[in-house]
Length: 331
Image 1 (cartoon, helix red, strand yellow):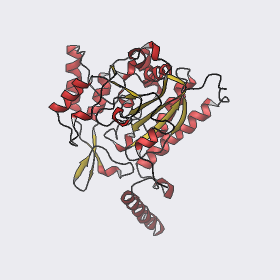
Image 2: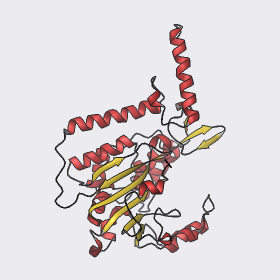
Image 3: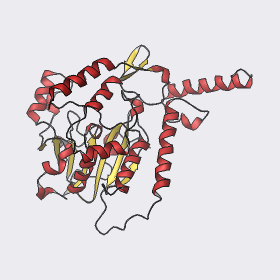
Image 4: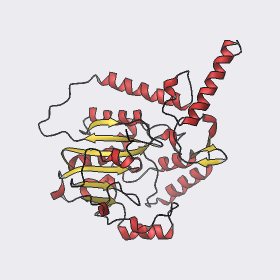
């Protein structure tokens, strides 16, 4: 069977005729207007500002500024519900987002806004980076308290601490003499190193704090793996803050995984009560297992099956050598 590309995964269950909204498509829209999609777009800047940015800082891949399409709603996706006119609330069949969710300073408010915009049965699909495969490698995963603090504070931008954490722990994978800011997970811990400068990041924190700057600075506000993302979404639903059902959270593909959330249909029966402690425990155990796999621990073929072929070979070779040492009484 032919493997689906990421656009097919994100748009599964939708058609071009359906009314959609894409968040920050930049130079690579998933559902492009020029391809006939009935799509609206939301971005923090309008098209002219985005094109000017590309003109001043050319895309490393050589993509043309002309690929940026008209922006229908201008502003932060955190404020999605207030940016889209009220007469369009409840009218969208789907919302799609690629590598934007992790930047949002208030994820709960965004999810609540998506609920307002989606029709009953509507779909929110997102591609998000796996921290084990990016420059967030050494950052701990985000927990429920982080999201709740952002929600209760009604945050409109990343905190100084989030900016510091991102800059100070900035990581690279060195392989074949080349540094990679993102790579598929599963490589040896010894290949990852911190390139971030904690002193420079701390100095920047103090300067911003002293100047009481209101300038927006970007950072990954949420750091996730598939299991930690599923846990966050489950906990927000259990707390009654979000009603979107988690339809699926995929395994990691390359540097990213895919999340599908659906707004319950009117009159749809609620799912049977779950044992909240048992569900949270199960997902927390999965997070620990992800950390163990990240570090290459344990003798398990299932632990390497999703790794790139060369990484599988390296890990299996290490495991075989370790087993040999144990059998010879040297391990």
